[in-house]
Image (cartoon, rainbow over all chains, first blue to last red; front, top):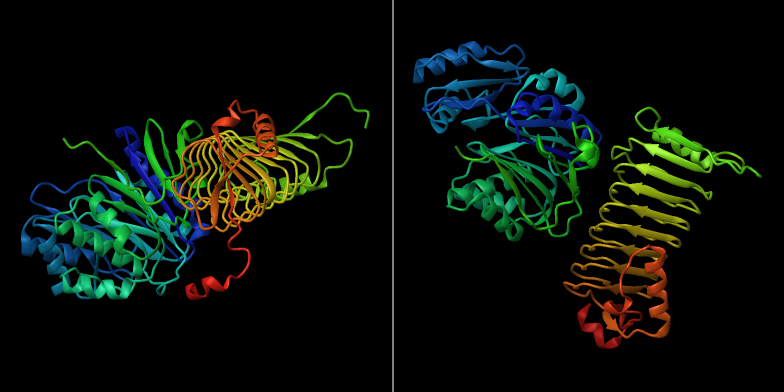
Length: 301
Length: 233
């Protein structure tokens, strides 16, 4: 199975409570994916010239202050780590690629979960309800966010194999379904220089979008190309710095519901995850058509 | 019996569990309220599954998967939209949805009537075996797949592979059909079909002109193995 929840705020007031509402949605999807849970929040953009990393350490009580100190020594600036359970968000005074590379080279014990301007990814194996509380997700504000609850089929259950998968700056993907041609596609994408960290099928879909967009495709074009190149079942939700997109494969075995009110746009695997949102009873509800890209983006200032 | 004044039983699913509700619906005896109103369905699954009594049930809001599954005799009115597998294997009675319905409406249904006032998604009437389904809007791909008996009326458009591998269900579509499935062809209206379609539109309370519909059914080429098709295997 697996469960997906996506939430996009249409008002600054709603942004303040987005973490609370996405947490409610995720808990409704807990039965669809009890193996692990994860979220991507788009919030607090790093200042111009800086970037934001989300790092993961399996080691309890990891010394994040030390890493933050080393990063500020390497790139200047002083930003403390914001620690949530096994993850820490650190703002670095350099571009995201350089910062990510530095972590990989100097601290191979850490995993870079996401890098970019505003993305923060938190994910962990275990029950989604406990995940929400452990990571204090309810207090987070955000312009938009995606969540995933996983029932594993194609690869093992670890934190690294949990969704969302991020293979490019500020880009992430969550997936309900399974892909058949991921092994060959993974090799092709690696030859193209795209970094793929696990043997998970969904990460290949994320990497495919990263590659397409690196080649100049828009998110919509990359997703439409995926209809031909990704063989399998899927409902995807894809997050970017500006918004999120939804795509179902043409056979459409995997569910998806969308809804829009004056305050928010939401998507989920099932309506019960939308029913918990304020104003859901009066919101427009519809099922996204198979093979069609749906996209919401905040207006560029 | 002899109870002229009808009382309505109210159930709030914000306070009552699905199991408790369904058990009560299964246990309704003569003389108890036959009219029920269910509030806060909130997309929950299996609401009103397995009813076996002529109850009148109104549901205020959107329901989740498998609402009214296996229904016998009851009439359920859903004042909202429905999730996957609405009225799956319905035996008799009626299920009316004011909004849209997700995929596999009335799958394997053996009798009764399903009305969807909005659109129905993919696989509407898949393997239907005698239920009548009337959709005021559109239906998605693979609707009427392997449909055996009963009628599927679509007042809007139908998606890809309509009536693929169909047996003897009658399909009526007013709008466009993206593509007919294997062994599904357009067929002439006989007097029986006009009467059937007129009757179903009236039952569904839909004001539509039966002459605007086209009828589709089985070419009956897939019924038996044909030696001419041996190369295809």
